Length: 255
Image (cartoon, rainbow, N blue to C red):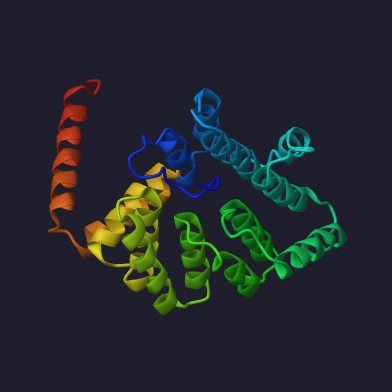
């Protein structure tokens, strides 16, 4: 299994489940903590752990850590991660253009499609360069859940909901219960109908998972209350709100 493909082989315990999920929902410090606690049982699991560890550092904009620790790493996956960190850490557009030119040369040759980390990092660089077509070409060579999920994000930004739904179908056929598939389903549902109650509920849960500001969650709750006041979730939520208000009155200091 190439590092970063997003699942353990059938029949094997998924040692990196918590690490991977923390990364996918944007809890990068939790992912780093999980990676540092993990004791992988195989070189493949070790490589995948390191990929998610250093990608989490990149997400926290700790580029120096990645550049220093991966200097001279023999792992193609980790060199791909370092390439992305180098791109983001570059001070000038000319430095970035130079990295993109090198990447273009690599993409023009025969690419190891089993190295999904390389495809993801290449696509990430192209996205930063406002080149979604090149990003999609890179991702199209991979079949990992993460490659498919990133394709869906790009297609939705391009207003190609029809193509995004096709990629989502591939994800659902590969692993319907995976966290990434659930996230991608929420993105597509939102694009289809942002006012649908189940979509809004998904967004409430996702915004909490992603650590968004409380006002973001409250905005989705307000939409639910306004448009779907008879939905079972809203009725239960409002009953709990009323209970809380009643308790708060009981314990309010007397004048």
